Amino acid sequence: MKQLADPFFTSRTTRKVGLGIPLFKQSAVQSGGDLVIESEVGVGTKVTASFVNSHIDRPPLGDLPNTVMLMISSNPSLFFEFKYIFNHNEFSINTDEINEALGGSPIYEPSVIRYLTELIRENIEELKHGDQ
Image 1: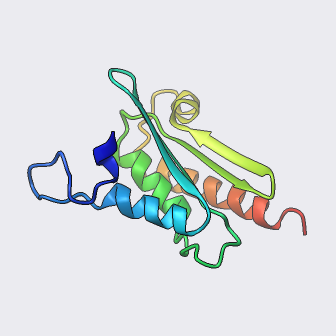
Image 2 (image 1 turned 45 degrees about the horizontal axis):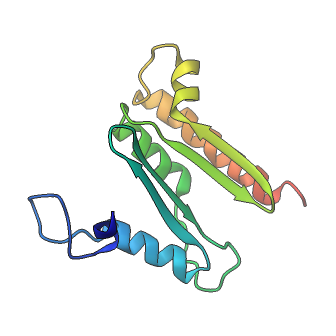
């Protein structure tokens, strides 16, 4: 677990460095948040990143809905949970709920990806602008 934050360690054989987790952690910490990794052999790994939205050093989050759906649709056998908290209000969605609602349709189907991307986008916007 200690090696996860080391940019000069990777378990991959294609290259000698692994910058993903270290850069993700640096972004979270520099913006007043944190990155926590919990892992249990044979069970799975939970990665939780928090960012302080109003922090001056928070990098732009980019297109969060598309990023979330890219991770989910590219890894249909993995469990993902996305939680967005803004001013103590939250929206969350996870792949177990999605798969149950789909009733067997694949999560990587283009129409499903488009629908879920818009669902995430609309809920984030509602949280950000709902109190106005």
